[in-house]
Image 1 (cartoon, rainbow, N blue to C red):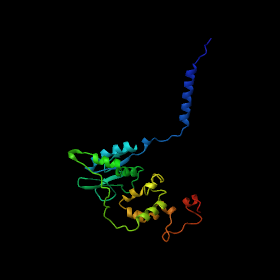
Image 2: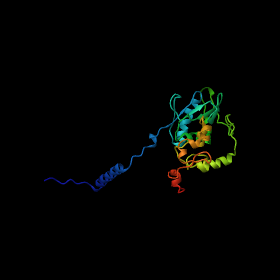
Image 3: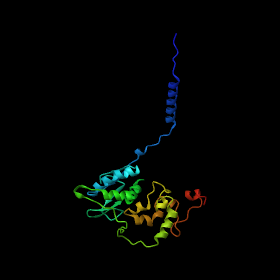
Image 4: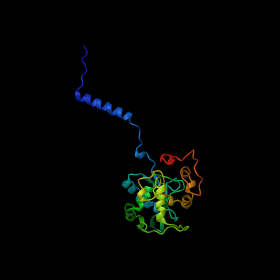
Length: 238
């Protein structure tokens, strides 16, 4: 006669717990880990390359976002350049260095790195760097002379208010709009670092996706009443 197999109450509870955990894992949707995201890629020529290699681990430690130093020949999201275009990054051998995004480059953490570099954490890291042969860099002065170019006239306070009202829904215009924008949309600061920034700002209403929901009085044609823009429809204005 076969003896019945007996299992202790504690062992039964452990087995039941494992079964419940396995069922829960199967039922949960797959969510990619943060480590699966493409890291922010930067390029820098000598001698700034040594400084950037020093800064990136400190940026990652502070923000938890991955950033790597890439070869200048590869596709990068930000590049350090001597050309007077983009955001002033630091001062070092030979003069000023700037941080700019190549045409078409976009990454969610590009703004984050630019802002970190300009804040106290990034400025202190630049000042603490000591390279071979006594190589040192300094953060840019608090008031940096803008790169030479066409003179832009107008009221900056009124312009900021206008941009915040009409563009702040998607773009980060200033600190007030930092947490209310679309993450994949470039900030005004990053756009200003592009070589064709003036053309982009002057013709924004003709560049996608703006024509689908933007009107400029006396410039753009009116919308078709039978096909109102989604943004206006959602807002209940049409």
